[in-house]
Length: 267
Image (cartoon, rainbow, N blue to C red; front, side, top):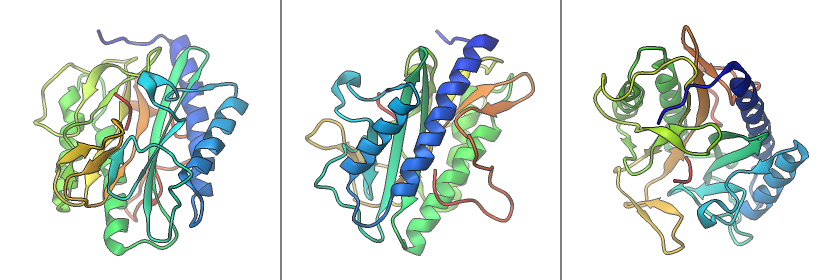
């Protein structure tokens, strides 16, 4: 069942997602050569709890951490570890969720560690741009598949691949709600979007082929060909005349001059 949220519910969802956006900014700023993913995880948990919320991922279906920290060829669900030390040239996807006043926030960003290669920078740029292409497709009366189609067209224009195994989702009083939102497919299919629907849109894009596999830890998904992967996510609400990005406290949308290099989920 797809839920359309009331004004009071949207207010609480906005607060939860604003918190997620702020915490994600703090964690992103801490990314540097020499820091461990466990240290980033501890920072995120402190900031979430300081905001009066609880980590949404920790304990969810047995997941052991506050953030998903996916480095280089890791697509999503990388488990933070004191043994994973970031180094110059890495990229890291940070996925973060919080539960505040009964409602969930969810957002993700991929960050370069120090100076990254031109190919990695292009992957981050295109993936973030594809997120905004998907968001631009959100409006009352549009179809769910219009979102994924917009993402796929942009990604493949640059020779990259969209991950098929993981998708975006509805979000509200549960972390994962209907509808599922693939990042690929033909337009004009699936449920119609309506005012009050809240969606977590999250392109996951590989520099090489689209295939992924899950490691023995049961969580970490990596690219089958070990190519780099990037992941960006925002939670949005369908409004009467378009869309509101709930998880963007201070960031700006990309312009024609370019986009910032900086911004998956457990299912």
